[in-house]
Length: 430
Image 1 (cartoon, rainbow, N blue to C red):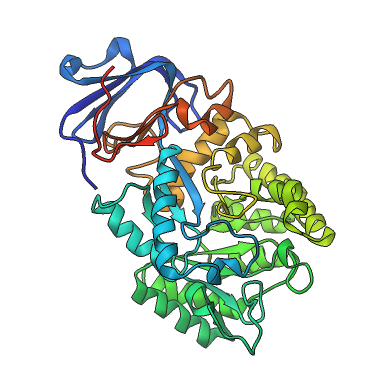
Image 2 (cartoon, one colour; image 1 turned 60 degrees about the vertical axis):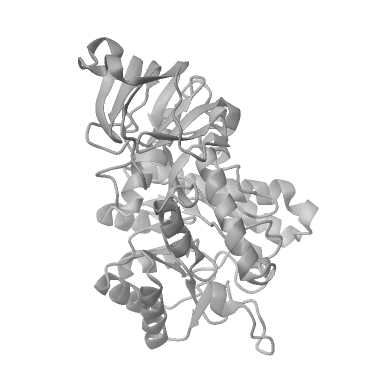
């Protein structure tokens, strides 16, 4: 990915650095050759910045680019589980993934971690982004996911073996789990996504209290993945599934919905981050009837929402880490609504805006394994910056309005202005 060759001074706004520290009033960020060289009050900006291109925040907010920590680039208008792998041909899904990557950047998310992808489209999407062929977030890839046979993601009956190899690698036992990971090694992914538990969406056979992988399978996945330098995460709702993942050595937990005291203690001891992805649950409850969801499914989503919100509050209050993002691309939870997750955690879960922004920036970068160069506004880090027209601490919902995003920068290059991509990566002078 290209870096800016000139200097840019972003000024006339409060600076939120992403660490959870109070905002710096009348602050500025100086970027030189794509790297942040100064963050602080405008009055103490280093000499020599007079020649820099100036980007005016219009009295709004200067903050790190957001991190979508559970990004499904290949999900699009999914109305049923089967739509994840057989609704569109892979050629069309590849084009949709490129459109989704562009959209997530236009929404202020300069980085993302894949939560699973049809085939290994996200691997090639990452290459295209890094080679400046398409616009999108810095991407950590996942490729195909792993689930136990008969589990949540094994919806095709035995007489109709179609599609599954594209989205899911089904396993029976530890040896098959190792084999599945080795396929992902060859695909070149960074994160191995698994399904230790079910979900409210499958209330009849694999609900949110059902286990879909054995501990032996999960441990085999971790051993093999770590041997090849990959990290492991998992869709974990049931308490036993979360505990198994932590004991097996998982590097992150998706959802972490039903967490008892013992499991929370284990999570904190291992310092494993959790990505709750709870806005999806609210949308499933509110819009489920439109899409023919049964009352049992909607009731399950309500239980998941309540349990997940309580677990998220407890994790953060106890000093644990939360990432923001999740499961966009369903018909009732479309791509482009990413920042609604942030408002949800303020208005429904009850977190402070500054804490939610830290989760969506610093913790997101930590989940990516790139906290040394992303996630906070600090000297020496990449110039991935979001400039917003308004005070996001007073009203975090501003982040939902792409027209209020004055500029989205990656390595000091403006990639989007007011929610519209800058295909040439041009500068904003104001």
